[in-house]
Amino acid sequence: MKKSTSSIDREVGTRVRMRRVSIGMSQEKLGELLGLTFQQVQKYEKGMNRISVGRLVDIAKILGVDIHFFFDGLKSGKPEAGFAEEDSAPYIADVMSTPEGLQLIRTFTSIKSAKVRKSIVQLVTSLAAQEDQERSA
Image (tube, one colour):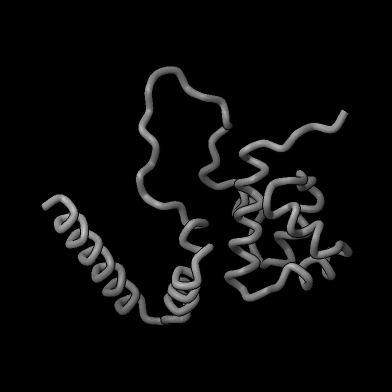
């Protein structure tokens, strides 16, 4: 009997896609380097197929990240007792799935000056706060 995939499988797949896209690598190229078809990479990224630990180590090496990149901040998937509010901020994968978000991330990471990057974060924070004020008015 084949095990079904979980939300964690989908999250890991999303992180593979996010990293692959952020470095400008195609599914075809990643598949070629792994000895797979782009369709298999696509299934991994969508969480339709589970990624074995060995395969994930290979993916991490190819994408130039530590294996922990795929797991940092993941919850066990088991619900906790009581009530909890969902996080209201958009998740990074949602941002990375838009052309504007991808362009923003690529451009932002190309800025070498920490001072300039900090100024951009302050500007975006200010614009978001202004938009929140306008919505609540």
